Length: 294
Image (cartoon, rainbow, N blue to C red; front, top):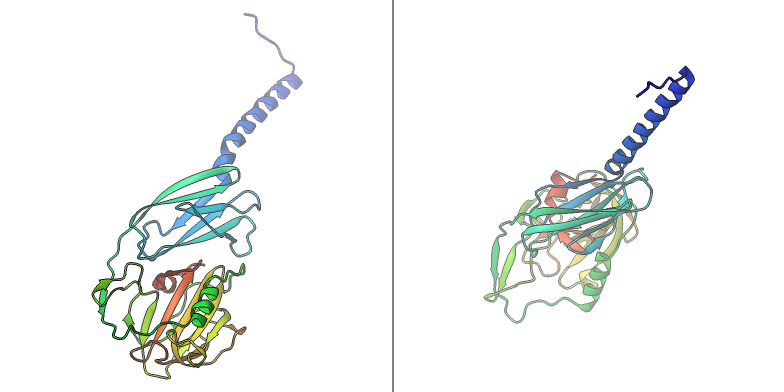
């Protein structure tokens, strides 16, 4: 075979074409890797935890995030136009084991299997005489409407604060027997802080007051109530207050006094019940205080 002679200009063209081909191949293989980046935390959640799914995409089309075949809302993170987050709630009523999380974006779908760890919750035995107190339809309707609030803006910043300095008298997730019968669908949907009547309650994070309920107006079980919207489907509710220092529509800052501890509604003594809801589901507030979600 005779050797092929190339002029310097043709040789340069050949080398340039070869490099361009290599670059095209490199980009072709690199692009799918960089296009869709996903981070899920915590990587070992337990019952009651909130799961954060961060998704970085190439364009501004929001991803679709689902868990156990249920889609959850996604929101942009801070000032980014290509980073999104979904918050997935879990509860003591869920079955421990495998959680299936699916993310679709940039024309591709990724599936993840996450282990949801079991967790021990205390059990209480309650004896009710005369049927106990029943919630009025007014408070049920207003609280249900509050739990459905979803505001696209994110108001909170970092870790949540402890709303009262009293001792914890009942933790999140407690299960109960009522008159000897186990309540299958019940769990304590918050944390209780026992303190003297009149001790201050502060907002654990920034947000807008979206619910005010008074025992005298029909909040027979919840008692005097304040509900705060922290944005993006994250809500706080405070029950059994003695006094309320804010009104509906107020925007509160973390640490701002919103009321005082009392024993209104279905309460056996002065305490604060703080419930934290994510997309309508009561989650454990403790990780929001100690780890936080930026």
